Length: 163
Image (cartoon, rainbow, N blue to C red; front, side):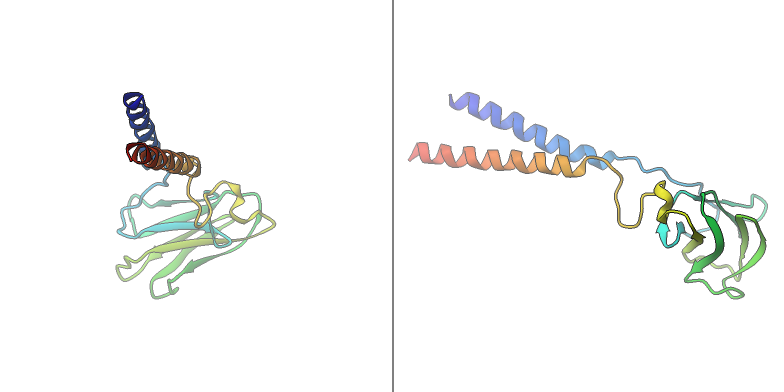
């Protein structure tokens, strides 16, 4: 009986540890990278969204075009943490897109925020600020906790039987 319990416990712990480690391999879709050293974040009404795309000019990586692809009415653009005329200048603005040029070798983070009226916040396509991708992390954490609890319970029973 002790051998069966030990084998069962080993299998249970192996499954629990495996379930938790699988989440480390979750794939998150990323956007095209530019040749600038800046990290680019795109948002709609302050929430990370895939409704905004961007592309750097292949001839001049300091020029970046942002385009809103959602259903709401685009009212304007904000570039948080950047000062127009110092860090960037607007090269062109047409319909749902804007092209900016980074000035003075700007290499800080770029956050392009599309101000939209009538669209859902984040439009449902993006992951949203503070949200992780749906990888089943909560379920596997529960499974791991259950496995650890069962292991502790079995160890306590084993200790009581020995006394």
